[in-house]
Image 1: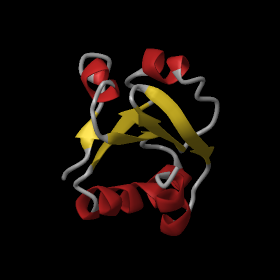
Image 2: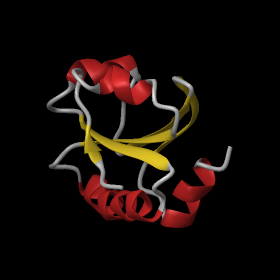
Image 3: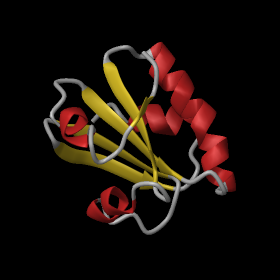
Length: 102
């Protein structure tokens, strides 16, 4: 499964997905975000049971504000429209996968 580019127009559909959702809040200028991005891409490719999306905080400030994003990268795991886990800062792949096992 490829990574979705999420914006305010498609967010409700993503939020209401039957799948576990992994959201990556990032910005193009953010060094740690660029470190996390290929890991998130890998997780999306290896786990078709997940819905993985990226949200550019510069392009979608309202969406970022609705999640109280203060620092990036911020990863959010959602199930059934509810946040079940979240983490700020660059993380290695095993730690990101562990977030999904809640």
